[in-house]
Length: 114
Image (cartoon, rainbow, N blue to C red; front, side):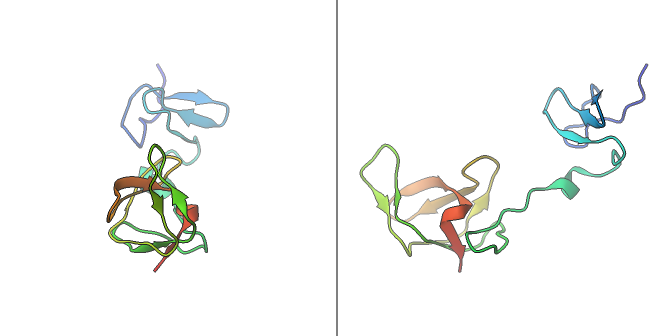
C-alpha cells in the first residue's frame, strides 16, 4: 500500500505519482512530491491588472478598453469604474456587477486598479 499524502486542496486519499509530481484524480490538483507538506494557499494564483498591480477581493477597478458585452448590443466604455470586485478562477478572473449592465465577468488584463 502506498504512503502518499492526501491532496492538500480537497483531502482526497487517491493521490498518485506522475514523475516528480503528485496528482489528485478528483480535483486535478498537482504539486511537487518534495514539497508535499505545503498547504494549498501557498500555491495560490496572484491576479494582476493591466499595469501590474495585485488585485484583491473588494477592490475598485477602472476599465481601460471598450468591451462589447457578448450576446447584446451593450458596451462597457473606457473609464467605467467597477466597485467591489470578486476574484475567481478561469479565463475571466474578475466577477463583478456593473451599473446599467448587471453581473458579468471581466479579464484582469482589461482593468486598472483605482
